[in-house]
Length: 461
Image (spheres, rainbow, N blue to C red):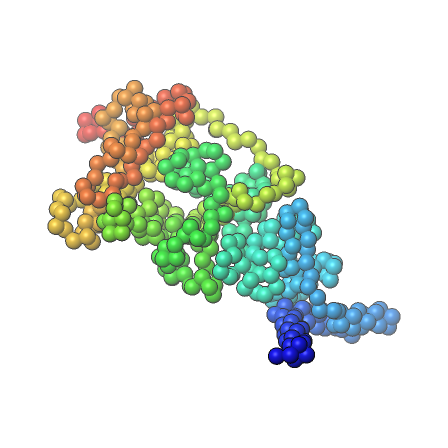
């Protein structure tokens, strides 16, 4: 091919690229939303002009309607340098753009045309959009201008838009006082439930809690590549399997946490208890099955609280609202001992108020059959699944105070766990050594409370 022909062909290709780029921009998905908003806003002004008796005011309203209808189609964005965000959400949600709609109010009911709710209330007034943007609270992909991409409902986007009460996790990120903050009641309830059910016994947050399982300081940042697809497929929300992650917003960290609270965690993360794929058996998730203790609303509250546990977002100090330092309640004696049991997450293994030892797969437990290696795997697992921590009221009568304190201080190593199935995985019954972590005063009151709940025989002793 001659240079002349090559020049002509390359120019034709370049022209084709320009035409394609122009067509792609002209047919961008945000344009119809913006055009419809301007038309709707123009109709409102026309109606006001028609009912206006003052000719000059009516003419001004008609002129305003004409101007709105002929507003240029453009990408709109909020630049929040402090947070490193460039949010183009107002390109479609024009009613929330204070330059187009200075009052931030309109009467439209449908998304994306309606204005932001509760703009006159303290929550919105304290978070001006020009300072916080949109994704700072709602998450999503601020630079995107198509519906699914902007909401973060696309593959490989780790921060999809928060839905419903889960958005209160954004309050937790910045507000040390979120437990008393109006608008963050669900997240505050979630923290209370997290502590009440002993989650901190295994999971550390902000330097406090156990180390038996992963720390949750950054659970909101957990990358999806650390969650196998088949595990997500095991999650059921309201009894339904999650849709494919390519086409919906359901494969996210919020539903991953929710799946562990509203399903049996051993089914969500089954691992390899019979060593089919590994040299040694690996037990399923050791997390208790909370379905009998937590309602769906309770589970959503815990998700809201944990959605604010992030280390990835570098939030400037001036965005933080400090909260009062945590203080133990003024309790003494048995009441203080019961509080210590809850404070350190003992309920995570021993149940609320130590009423029932929680399940520990392949530990010894009530109702198990005598082990027979010829049992089918389903029968073996059913018996392994009955393994449980000792029920403390049954056990406490066998200890004296000094012995119990020594037991708590030294803990129980994993090697001491007794297996129901000798070929199965090691039960996750480790109790950490609390020596040096719990004060003597706390230990004394804890031991006294535990001994007070010991079952008594028919004689009263």
